[in-house]
Length: 336
Image 1 (tube, rainbow, N blue to C red):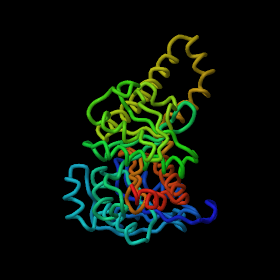
Image 2: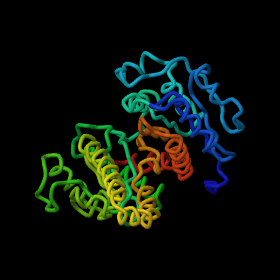
Image 3: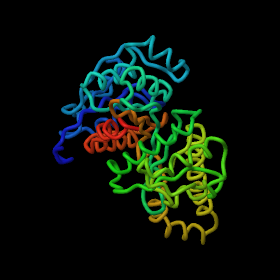
Image 4: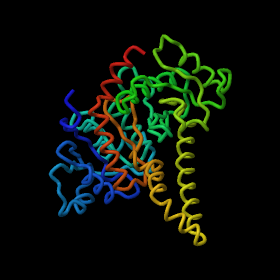
């Protein structure tokens, strides 16, 4: 593989996906695009072109679509019936090899459906999973499934552990990722039927995983494991709870710093440190979550993503492509 800095990556971007599309999405694309990162902006020309006036578009190409999928559409039906939508056209660019990945802040359900129906699963993958990178106290950690599979069987969590380990090695540079199972207690006998069934599969030495046991929710951000797996329902609830808690905590600190004179002075002194904390906890720093297990990198951003989040999602996605995550998944999951 060519050195990361030398390899040009092409990513498709849903210009009409998200609450702040197309303005913020196009701005994010223009921020991230470069000679090493070319962006295919997918959207209706009459909607997108006004935001490209007077912009440097050397590394951005408009790929026309004819419609858009909204959050009110039934995802799978919309993907099947709206073949000219920005999500389907973007996914098709990956399936046809014109792009190495696809980024969207649009409907998560439609992105999942497009990943499965258009891009297709990697051979050996039964359940593609949404992976997110969490800001652990000692560095980033991988958490999945963050919402793709609400109902799971134990063997699916085993597959998630393999997917997460591949991602941790290739995207985060963790040589031997430690795998943990999100549970209500550390003991092997704790948990529901899913956790009890998954534990022996993860612990089986024949699987080749570095399993460290159960991880309680309170320890999730303390790097007791490099990869933490759970079902998509629990994972999505946990992820949104973390994001909401971080936002509420920062707002409380800001409110406390606006009290009396002493609080205001203290707030001024703490501002640089609080800014750094905010950068670590801000989900926009990571850009989005990643659907792994399909034949191309799929990046799913928050619906309210700003230009900063879109740009970061593109940059992180390009890095993941350069590190060969999809190829690694294909190679390692073939015999699972």
